[in-house]
Image (tube, rainbow, N blue to C red):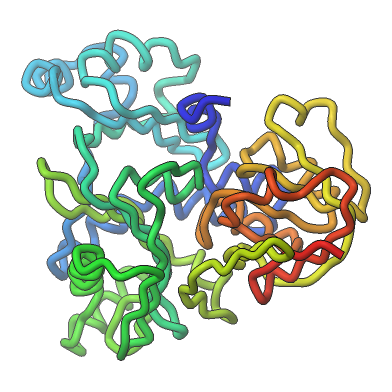
Length: 366
């Protein structure tokens, strides 16, 4: 399946969590729907660049209010992302990106079968290039995640090609990167500088208005950023719930050491299991069934793989990273998951008995 086709099929982390019946999926939906209001609140207290939207009631967009038409007239040729954010949190958020404001208004928006009175339309500037993108968690274990010189969905969804993500970890003293890259390190230092608040009075204010916490003078949270030549560095997500899913484990970068007998990767979800390899390509998902002693092998898990992820003993992927949506879901399912092996679907054969030790970052044939 082509990369662009795979990316179009991706869903938000909230939707992944809903597919597995996660207890906090409702909280996550609320947290996701309010992320830009939260970032705007933070930006009112400290310098915090983010992708600030222009917001209209969806009904005004549909009817073509004077204010909305004036915005379209001024920004019609600008690329945008459009989020239809529900006022009723039980409703789904609808979204698209990469088209001009005029194209969205004339096309995608009018195709949505919704009650416009129940939604707000968030028009968000969309850069034409991506110099850097990052996903990260900042908690008691430090500041860790991945950065790539490409668009951010390559990190959240895991379907990267070249360049590949660089993993990083900062323990509040020293930086570790999975490969030496001074430009990436400079970008990471810039990102974390916006999360440091030394003034105790400002910390108290932020804690009060955002119900958040600090560690070593840094704001705890899950963050996504993009940097473009047009807009510079922007935070595009700030989530207060996700860090708890990683509170017990520090994800420290390490290089793969693949041999003929052993596949090395990154810990998407810890654990160890043994079983038979089962390679499932995207075009085989619909007809596939796995037994509880089979280990799912694939290029990268997409939402269609969720039923198989529930059935299998463990998961090994060629691509993907430590904070991809699929890795988080594997952790919540309690399934050992090894990501970013590079060649698992090519090196392993169906029916081979293998040992998967995701905690230590390897799989080997028995």
